[in-house]
Length: 187
Image 1 (cartoon, rainbow, N blue to C red):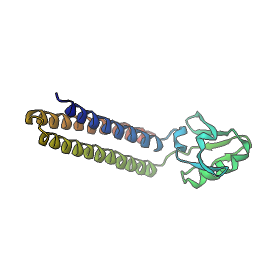
Image 2: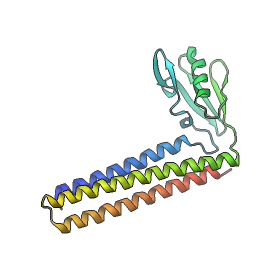
Image 3: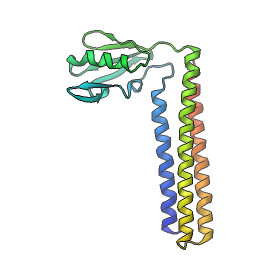
Image 4: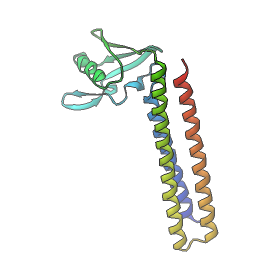
């Protein structure tokens, strides 16, 4: 197989893998009944003039499935962290206990679970769109390779491999989504 053909296939695989990694990261932010430190991903505070993710200013852990403990390294920012969590509109009401913030994660209502499944479905669709865009780019590259003199049967094989790769990754997205949906809907 020609090295440009292998490179094209490897680029497509890498892009699709990144789309999957991104999907999993987005799914970590969608809470399913149990508390996790990832629920606070994306929350930032103004830490001495720099917008800083709270995980870089505090220890965040979950002693049990119903609560998150945020323990700032610098106690003077506990109020800033508390305000940032409330401003992030995550549905949490942190309790300031002086040294730590205690966040009780409320149980999800049926309606809220359905909203979260909808959000997860939307993220899964974004991943599928990304994967299909990567397929289109790889197929365009394959056509250019044919114009550059790569034998037609090699290009046909490449396009076949690209489609197989696309099908595999779309199927992985479906499995990840089904697992997340089950996780969200489990009471």
